[in-house]
Image (cartoon, rainbow, N blue to C red; front, side, top):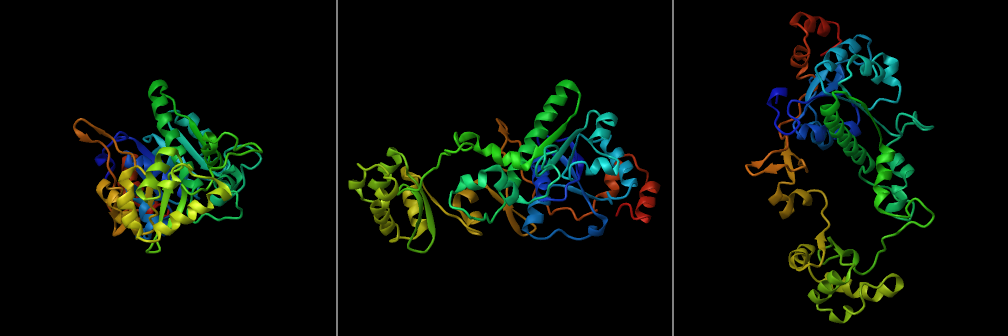
Length: 378
């Protein structure tokens, strides 16, 4: 899909994606699904290699690709010419690294005051930890969210949590900055700390940043139960209405008057519910109890996610290059129908769009040929 073919609320918005890691890729994926023309800047060494694996396909879809060696000084002039016709630049370099290479936000703020510059980093652009490196678990642990999710340490998340949270907040920042630029005509820098974004999740939990954090307890009405086929269901019947509906549906009316007992007092009720759930497969319990207001749901894993009837009916996953990936969760519609979609074409091979992107930035065919001959682009 060319930059001119994009549809959605961000159609006509050009984004330069200088990121190398998932935080930036998640962020620009949100923008691409909203219609922005996202141009990935890939290293020349990767040119022609087809993206593979669910992570690459899921995060690279819907974007064009240009292969440019950003490590060499001449790349700065190419980026400058691209920035002149772009709206947003997203980068995840170490704070100060792009400034040191000769084209950072301090340069862009003077040369391209309309440009929105989104800097995504682990700990932000300032503060004692600004220069430190890390991964998802680093930021999750630092933020307090890791310990808030369970007091029973150690535990180790098997999927990224803080990274997509940070990316979403970065995308929200870009959207806000675009609206602000529409009023003022001026761009800005977005300083997004992944650790800060993870900490923000605790906003709805008063006491989490004190010595007396609020814990959502495990009880008979709020826990996972294993069913007769070995699969699990989630039960969230922790208030009187849902607890009553659950007990009546399971023919355990004598438990209704003891609304979801906590701690050791809940052990007998937990055992009775577990014994009942063990008599049928998980899918049967979900189908039977789900419509009754019992707050019972499936615990989906792997290929069970795209196979779930609700996900199928809603189109919550799509297939890209033979790989099922999450669809764009932002659904826009008006009286005439949908106004947003999910890009399902195969991700562009690195460097597949180099010539057209450079041409759009004003480079002549002779200049492009010279840059390619010297290995600056591929």
